[in-house]
Length: 368
Image 1: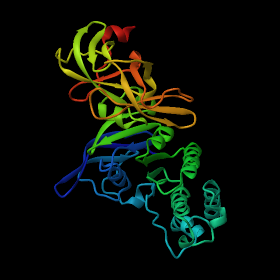
Image 2 (image 1 turned 60 degrees about the vertical axis):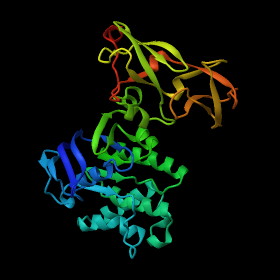
Image 3 (image 1 turned 30 degrees about the vertical axis):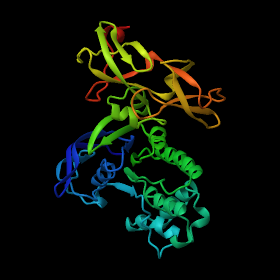
Image 4 (image 1 turned 135 degrees about the vertical axis):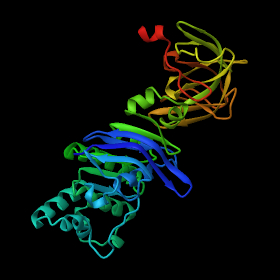
């Protein structure tokens, strides 16, 4: 196992600044997932750790050693790419064994490693085939197996499940989690899929425009997002956002006015915001309750999605251009065209200031 420490890490391509002053500590044996929108720098950051890109500025340590100038083969890392990068003239077995033979391992050890990995990835029946005889999903599993068979100190994944179908993706997530528990290796995983991030990670790193937006456990990021960006990016369906006007701040919290909802007293500390200024109220779909209503405070239901064990109810907002969504267990009696009033759960509401920073709880509420 090995830790990874990044200090003020920067990467530029010409005049384009891709990675900006990234500070990050990844502990021995942790499973860390990088997530963020396209172009946020997550794959570039992974390639910097692998040694496939040079560092423009800053320091990278693996264990106790600074590795800024070390080539990939000397870093003790294995990498699984989004593209397969298989040797077309080699069989599946030969592709998976190639790195082990380069390391001059005994033939018996090579065979044990390859066969064990093949069983995990369900490749036993494909070991004598060439890559051209495999489906896209099978090729990706071979690429994963080639890195996994080496059992490196640090295993890097760059969206390895993107070419698999939905059912196999679920199965492979479980196998990767089991592999992590078995090997105890430090794993760093890049994905745009929130489900992969939430189910695999010990720690999630949310990236935005080349900077770290927030680092924390899946529970922390979901329950306590520090910015509106994180609140909206983590969770599916996304968090509901509504404009709110600050009316009053006191020792217990603040009172805000929300279009279509009315006045609501919340436990957040908005003392840094001037009275009358606009805030953003955020509430997750499962914490947005609906009540039958008519009149000015009623929202119209414009769509209902039945997903088997749960139902998503979409409502036309009073302000803003994004539909609000309520998540509830199936079955549900709500129908398109009905009118409903919003009754958000106060204890689960988030407030964000004009800079999209989350407001913390008032001191008295924290003490309670």
